[in-house]
Amino acid sequence: MNEQSYAYGATKSSIRELAAYAAARKAEIGAENVFDFSLGNPSIPAPDEVRMAITRALTLPATQLHGYTPAAGLPDVRAAIAASLCRRFGDDAATASDLYLTCGAAACLSICLNALLNPGDEVIVIAPYFPEYRVWIETAGGVCVEVRADEATSQPDVAAIAAAITPRTRAIIVNSPNNPTGAVYSAEVLGQLAAALAPHDIVLIADEPYRELLYSGTVPWIPSLYNRTLVCYSYSKSLSLPGERIGWVLVPPAFPEHDRMFAAVAGAGRKLGFVCAPALFQRVIAECIDVPSNVAAYEENLHALTAILDACGYEYIMPQGAFYLWIRALEPDARAFSERAKSLELMLVASDSFGVPGWVRAGTCVSRDTIDRSAPAWEALAASYR
Ligand code: PLP
Image (tube, rainbow, N blue to C red; front, side):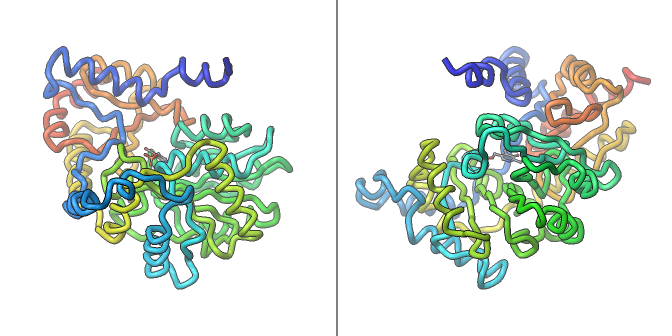
């Protein structure tokens, strides 16, 4: 048995563990009495265009509909995505042959890390960070190096990142809009980051599943600021399709040694078995590329939840994007705080697995009813610390 794999299977992700506990409590005491803010599972249904595209695809001959596609995806789907990127980010943003379609951002990240790392290579992550990064880095043979974001702004602390660079640093993962803080990294800070990375040829892996879920400002297109960027994108959040496992890796045309890098991406896909992304959903996303996300619904949730928190005196970071709220725990031990919240049926993920102490994450991708009903539990939790 591979002990590393065993260890990852035996110790569950704290997010999924909490979600499983919430599901069990819902079965015991009724779903309406559990306030489950644990998962990043979109509460907004996929747009109608998705259903219509599925219906159209179902008329294809079965061998096409359910058949293998090329490992990197259907050529016309890759062309449609590239055309959309060029419309949005400039004529030279992408061509079809720069895209590798795969099973959501999780597979994109694993592929990029396996394409880049040799044993012992270091990858910088900006804490707080999505906990699975550590799993994907370590299983690709790398070492996860945590660098705290600037506490006041939630932006990358470029001086601290520069100080963490060693001769083994191969890559940095940049996630904006950010899970869990909702921060959108500014072009100014990303430009400074690019200047710090460039002398060392460090690859920037831009993990962008929340690009479309934006409440204010714009999300800079990182390849135009730093050419050694790989972009990971997923339709899990933007089109509410997390269970369908569809997204892509882009090796932008200006990436140095582009063809070798693309071959390594394709090779990592082959090595990991991430070939031929789900065929039906390749076709669906090609038809839904420019369908807007329902950001307004998440924004309403956000305002409803922050109104409750304001009334109880909680401190939180106002997100610019994504669908989470990063809330300061009312005691230094975030796990203890999360446990106390749990006893009030309030499911909040402790910040420790995100690489920082003292905070919790609440997903705002829940039903409005859950938020409204949760108000007394938030108040009871706050009151228990007064
Ligand atoms: N990256 C971040 C920052 C995420 O929050 C998630 C999922 O929540 C993923 C990657 C994985 O997304 P996917 O469902 O597309 O694999």
